[in-house]
Amino acid sequence: DIQMTQSPSSLSASVGDRVTITCRASQSISSYLNWYQQKPGKAPKLLIYAASSLQSGVPSRFSGSGSGTDFTLTISSLQPEDFATYYCQQSYSTPRVTFGPGTKVDIK
Amino acid sequence: EVQLVESGGGLVQPGGSLRLSCAASGFTFSSYEMNWVRQAPGKGLEWVSYISSSGSTIYYADSVKGRFTISRDNAKNSLYLQMNSLRAEDTAVYYCARDKLGSSWYDYWGQGTLVTVSS
Image 1 (tube, rainbow over the protein chains, first blue to last red):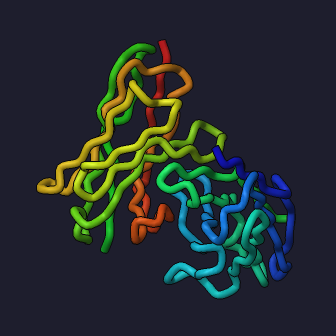
Image 2: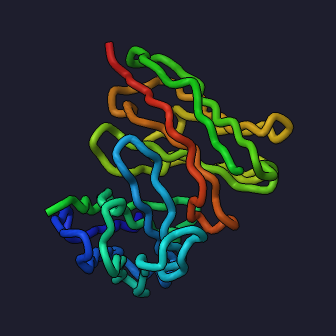
């Protein structure tokens, strides 16, 4: 199985900050990497697919990059509604996908 | 508007069974591959099962293989998960999720249904 790790596991940031979350795969997954946002008590929401493609309706302050084993989700200017947990997901071994453990972004 | 609505969760004793349903609307259900994903309380996301658009191809996570059965009824726009021999570690919120373009990124999720396995 492909294992996914994320760093940091949590971070505190202020509105307007630039935030970067890293995801690493245990083997090369090309660009088969997706990012989700989850708020408490809610279902995950797709933000980025195929490493860098922005899902329709997602604000442009979210961006993704990377390929192979190392990936990054960047929020260019953190907004109040962005405080949430973020998960990466590999879809290289489709349909047997795996998720990262999550990164919780909270208010400093 | 795309909607996925799960139902069927609840409290069940270890060794018991439950059947989850996911009612789909707002899109051509028969054209999309579907999945179940679960999340234990306070934990991360775990993929559980996949079914192709026709229902002819099915996959399970090792943790549920032999105990869970995924199925769909395209005439009723519904997805199902039959869960047998339930264990405490199956306690989780179960989400149905639509596969976008068959590439295993999930563009729509239901609100989830909680399954609690406890005596």
